Structures are given as structure tokens and as C-alpha cells.
Length: 295
Image (cartoon, rainbow, N blue to C red):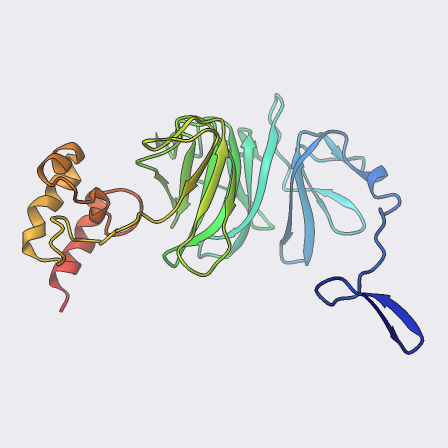
């Protein structure tokens, strides 16, 4: 579509905005990196938005910058001393996330130090200093996704690890409220990518990787993770109400899932996940008691 106004001719894109001419910026690439870039994110560290890049490189625009660098629109700079591993550190993904304490840049990859701080494959940067995420992951952290589940900010982390925060967590974990959370049902191999479906309702996530199963289901390298259909928190005997008759089945759901499912066939074990953290465990006891005692 062409609009003629005031003697000017402008081509409009389908959304109705003027479509400007596009070109590559001269000189930008020439002042780039000496190794591959795997991830990019725009982050405001308090001095204005800037482009952060991560990958497997030693220098950015001639400036020493081990595996992570910042471009402010005019020049490159190192970020907090970089990731000075003695071997070959690599950044696989970058993500801006606010865990409730302010926006930070989260960095995932294969590295053991950030600046002078020991870390384990994942770290955050607030513009001034690095911070570890607990004990991190025991192997390569590859994919990050910032999201919100039930009103709580959550950072999804995927990779080739088997531990997160020192606890069993195969291929996928969540960093939430300052601690790691594992998935009871998870892919059987590494997670390499995430995508979130748009919409204002309950989130739907797509997970890609090297796995052949996701939870109990055959799932060839791609899986869908969404709210459990029919979830009724607290109704452990499936009689349609939450009352004292749910106490015994709740106890079985917490201590022995197989026994719960044998004793209450057809009733959803996930109904015991009162706090919606994808686990039925002791963390659900207080929320369950509140459900029983609420008017």
C-alpha cells in the first residue's frame, strides 16, 4: 500500500506503519567478535539499554571479553570480568528476568567462574556484580525462559544436567523465589529450547531437545507442558468437595503415589499439588490445611 501525503510517498507495512528501508550497518561486523555468538539479549544495567552477546569468544572489538560482551551502540566492553575459565567457557543462552527483586541478565552455558566468583553453569548479572543461582547445575545449562506461573515469576532452565541446586533435576528445572525446583515428570534427555504460547490464560510451554519421552508419554524431541486437565486442588477422593474425607488420600498422595493411585483409582494425583509447583510433597501440607479450614 502506498500513501501520498504532503508530496511524500511512503510504503505502509500491513500493520499500517511506514516501512523504512533496511540495510546492514557498515563497520559493525568489522568490530565484532573473534568467535561464534550463540545468544543475544537487550538489558538495561542502569546506564540505558545495551546489547549483550554470549558465545565462545575471547575478544569483542579487540577488547578482551571472555564469552560475554556488551555493545552500547558505539563500543564493545567486557562484562564483569567475563567467564574466565582456564579451558573453553561457552554461553548458550541469555535471558532478562525479574525474580521479584529486580531485573537481571541471566546467563546459561558451560562455565565455572564469573569474574572472580565460583559458579556452576548459570549466573545472573545486575549491571554491577555477578550472583550465583545456588549450586547451579552439574552440567551444561543450555536454554532459558522467563515466565510467570500463577502470579509467581519463574525462570525455566533446560540443558544436559542431572542436578540443579544439588538436587535431582534431569534436563529441566525452575529457579523460583530464590531456590531450585525440580520436575516430578520430565523429559528423559536434554532440553535445548523453550517457547511459550501467547495468551493471558494459563501458560502453555513447548520444550525441544534430544528426548524421546516427556513424563510418561512418548515425545520425540518436542513436548508440550501445560496445566493438568481436571486439576481440582485438594479434592483427593474426587467427591467434588474438599473436606476431612480428603485427609487420608492426601497423606497417601504425599508419601506414596503408587499406593494413592491404587487406593483411589481414577482420582488425579496432581490434585494434591496445592501450591502448583508440579510436586505433591510436604510443601503442600500448609496450603492443604488452609483449604480445609477456609470458610
